[in-house]
Image (tube, rainbow, N blue to C red; front, side, top):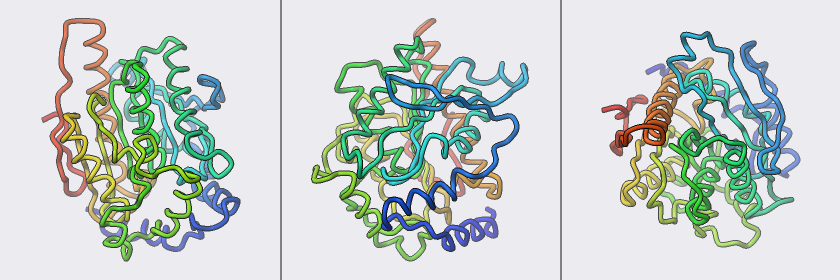
Length: 333
């Protein structure tokens, strides 16, 4: 475990001017400066497009023929960025999306869903399901799609799956959520229990953003707070979290709820890591390891879903619900 690297990342976040409880214009400007202004690697290519009438960005990473043959082929990731439903953009997320794409070989579409307070709930969930429909209508089969989200975007990914189930659309092959915010009632014990060690988030700031997003809606509504939903019928799920974040209990309780509802689920908790630590892969060994696990999970389930669609019936390997140490995984066992 890279204790020095983890301490460095936490210090960077602690010294950041980002305060999600600040006026939304300030939050957006600071969030973009932190996340969206870093230069991209030369192998990353992206282009604007529309999915179901929703703005999005398609992300590709150059790979050689040998690497491409070992990866996920024509699979597609549908990605939802973080930002507490108030900040962030598809463009801001391209760097992290590219880190995932580079490892698993799929193309990716990161969605510019509408933000609060201008567009409160359920605008974001409407955009998410519209983008998914658009990807299906473009000819991509559900078995070739995996859904990935971070923070609020992770909660949105889960809400979209519930909308898919409600509408009767085919489910994607798999879902990965990074540091999910899926309980807008902020009822987890870690809201207080991890407050002293979380360098990035506070309960008061999240409460401000939740109230802005909900605009009077019930935070325990399944499509607003997926933690409170019936998750039966959802695709295999991987959850990653750091242990130094107030949203830790959202991840732990989501894993328990998924397991109770017979969803194949894997939970990884990285000791000492902060919120969405995967975004620091350039300077944090654990971040790269976590993204490697994400890529393995996605490849396994995308390939299994594709075989089930095109060949003899096979079942994806079920993942045990695990509480892991320094980003160790039960995948593939």
